[in-house]
Image (cartoon, rainbow, N blue to C red; front, side):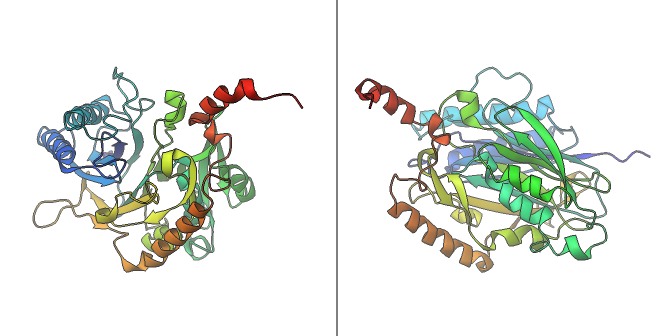
Amino acid sequence: MVQRKTTISLIKCDVGSLAGHHVVPKPLFNIAKRNLKNAEDDGLINSYHVFNAGDDLQLLMVHGKGESNPEIHKLAWNTFQEAAKRAQDLKLYGAGQDLLKSAFSGNVRGMGPGVAEMEIEERGSDPVVVFAADKTSAGAFNFPLFRIFADPMSTAGLVIDPSMVGGFKFEVLDTMENKGVILKCPEEMYGLVGLIGTVGRYIISRVWRAKDSLICAVGSVTKLSKIAGKYVGKDDPVLIVRSQHGLPALGEILVPFMHSYLVAGWMRGSHWGPMMPVGVKDARCTVFDGPPRIVALGFQVSNGMIAEGDDGKPMIADLFDDPAFDMARHEAMEYASMLRRMGEFEPARLGVEEMEYTSLPQLLKRLRERFNPL
């Protein structure tokens, strides 16, 4: 008997925000919940969960349709379009900001929304963690993914779990050349770090277990500036990670977030800022449109669905809603304060390559005639 595969789809979009680039308001949540509930009732999806990371509306769907399925992507696209229309009616800020193209062609990839999808054959128990970040770029997950799947000082299983000692394979995309390469760790660890340390260009898109190519992690790689040709907001990536049973344990997946680290984005997408792990209730951006926030939700995949409790509702764990991450939050504010004291001077502000998609080229154009040869 062929085991039926299960697909986890996490699709996000900035459709409009309350009081600036702050948070998704309730009317937009209501639209998403209604549309996904109708899709569940119609049998298109098996289960769902709607949440936010800052001003990004997040649609988590579990179904049996496979990756890049036109019906699933159409459901997400229509939901985002309807929510954006409601945002326009309410004069919310940035209504439909990520909807960069108007004609749906079967897939939301390349149209603005961020997408992470993973088709799996369910194991005896399949814990999954989904991450969603706001006010940052597509390369923001490079550092934690390296720590989770390649750093034995972070993930003990790389040393003591026989199912993991063979290492993991990383697919790295070159977003400038639109090419990809697969590197295996630990053998090619230094080469991997050499690439992914350049977070604005090289992005980890997928991770597999080396010994059997079991899919372990999938992240979104959408770069909005490449689609629009100008700054229209940061990429705000999402990530799906499988856990346990020959993969990193839940605690190993979360340990990189014990400390804050710097990511590109923050105010106007033009600054380095500290990543702050928060519970969903605190996933709202304030100081300098930040600091950049990240949420982590854990759940079990069970028979093609998110495992449900006795009340028939999906059981979702809000993993960063925990005092264990208070230190990271405190560090994030210390780093934020230090960086803001630098104002608009590098390295607080991004380098010239990343500023290409901001207002800086317009400034240079206005001043071009005033530059004189030395």
